[in-house]
Image 1 (tube, rainbow, N blue to C red):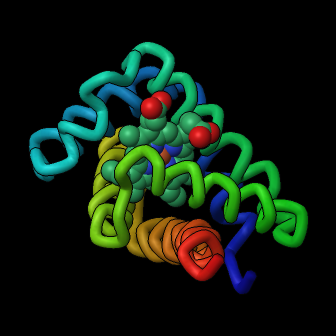
Image 2: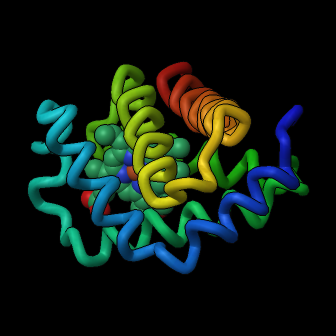
Length: 139
Ligand code: HEM
């Protein structure tokens, strides 16, 4: 992956101590900006979901230096998301919400370079997740 790993790791260190706030802001924006995804989370325990989102972000950032280890797990994650009702158009919505929320929480530390690095990372991650769903529909 041609990702700016150091920049991502560094910026994650900035927001990680504010993880709870990040997750709150993320879901508030997601449901407000994209009400169409609300039904997907209807029967989901949001308390669990909040900690899972953060855990998966930590996992992804921790594994950026070993993408070959990350890819199979992301493909499986993508396959599970098909069962959750996630479709391709939802991915950019979640990505835009993530970047917007990170920017809000990072505050004055945020800049265009970080915005680009996180968008690129999210795009790569979602592409791998979606490639996992193609495998499912082909078999
Ligand atoms: C890079 C993108 C994404 C990542 C890393 C991610 C990560 C996760 C993780 C780790 C879980 C916990 C359950 C599991 O491991 O299977 C989860 C659950 C969930 N995700 Fe995502 N997700 C992403 C994108 C999306 C998108 C685009 C949607 C669609 C709106 C979505 C909707 C959901 C829902 C509804 C659940 C709850 C499933 C349940 O407990 O019933 N996710 N996600």
